[in-house]
Length: 420
Image 1 (tube, rainbow, N blue to C red):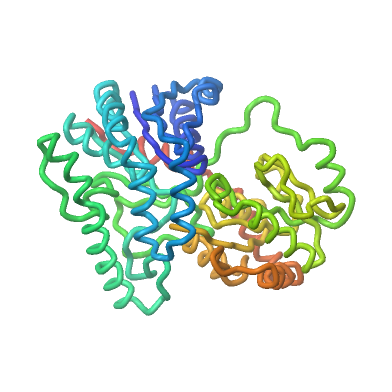
Image 2 (spheres, rainbow, N blue to C red):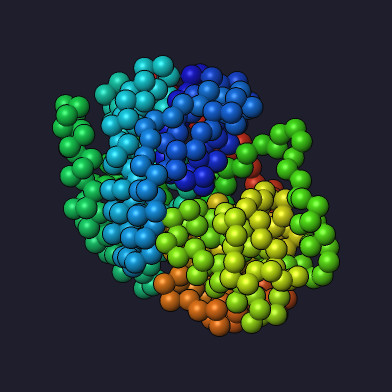
């Protein structure tokens, strides 16, 4: 079958779709992937190595990511955070995404999209092509858990809060989406969650049931698969010799990264200083991931190692714990490696993942980038490093996650459907 896939966002939004495309190709399908990356990264070479044509849709102003990051850090309301992201990092490329979406629908029998890429769903409706939605977090309405950022108040209150949140989402998001549909001659959407984000046929959740068991009140169109991991190819990335020496020259270090949030951090030097000072107060060793050529902040220490990039699945298993922002990809990578986490959320779904890891017993209570101090982060680090129960729980969850194959499960679910 010919299948078109479209995604948008940061590295954490592209890698899972690249993994799904690779899995579908291994299963014998002809797959094309369209990417809109918020910093205009080019994935064509990586796609070629997997035998997947990759096209780009639109280019964003490089300053937009920085401005959006500054706005996100200052905003506490999750729905308004999403509004900032859509306004600054999605809408400017929406028409280009729609153009490529129409092309995908012309070329393919089935299209699969990132849940936020509404132009693909619109194009699929125009072309009468079946559409599958992929979610990178299990944040679909359920009475079993509350919306992100809201305490668990029981099934009745959870259901009501999802409805209230849905009404707010409709006011914030539907006008821009319905404007596109009006121009396409399509009826207006009435409900963001069901009409925009979800497919009526199949919704794949690319996250682990070991971390978040699927709620009993989801219907059969919603399927939890497990995380989507890229296949290992040829010669793997090898840790540099100086990093290997550092990891061997003492107890297992922390790994500290704020992931994609670092790209737009308006106070990158302060963030690095926060991590360094917390390590010193906690009396531990650490690997700090930073793109800054000169990280400064007194990082010249035998207990601190700075690097710009590492393959997390190769380094995390050799670390004592991971301090991170709570992105879906990093949360899964740390847990799959059997590492406890310390989550310092910045925006959007990161508080959700911080809560998931805490409830699973593999992370202390969530910290917030706007309010966290080096003392507070150091206390959380000490709690994790002193907790044998947390280490054992993380090890058990990691073993369970390594037995999952989210891509294989997704490919099987797609194959079971009749798409004609």
